[in-house]
Image 1 (tube, one colour):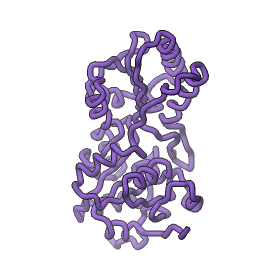
Image 2 (tube, helix red, strand yellow):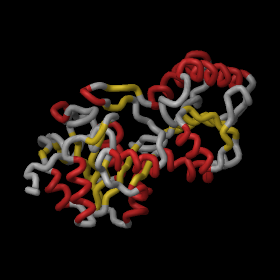
Image 3 (tube, one colour):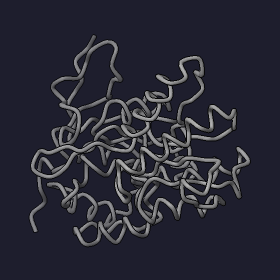
Length: 287
């Protein structure tokens, strides 16, 4: 198998009509913008290059995320931000979940995504039809997980129907100073493992996963751009690169987040088209 070629951000901008950028690990981490991010966004805005952020972060509405990026020096308009939380609206519509009672794990914006999709947010104790995991923060972790798990056990025992939705399939995310944290996909794994342990004959007790690597978020990017000449720039093999591979897009793996670019290339892995150390310009423009 041929080695994966390196590429610079300048070459990517020149080569593709539309850029799809992951947020965490590519442009930012939990404490601010990464090297080269402000310069890249400034240049894309200046030359009016079409670009979109494809993020599995379902804890912030596009307006909230845009305001945060502004504080970090990234002038990204809300309409350029495509979130996994925003995919709930179409899912609720196509699966008849409007007006269903929904327990939402996540902060206020995660609940707003559910309300915008037509769901009714409720507490665990009041009874629910849908569990939506939007984020790993915004709620008392152990107490909430225990309560949700207990009620799910009771629902299975009573043979009641319910829906399990995971907006953000990410298992981990990069933090500042080389740190990492668990993401909401890890919460889904905990609940699925517990359900499988107690009810081993019920193989359907799994969360429906939205966001990357699944196709819906890429379809939305294609709908907005109207151009299939897109490239995905991300930091994770299992979400960014696998999703781009499946959707038929070229992909660039950046080494500033989850996946070490030196460790790619195994036959059983998703394969990026190119690798890049970071989005910092190889030849910075003089001010």
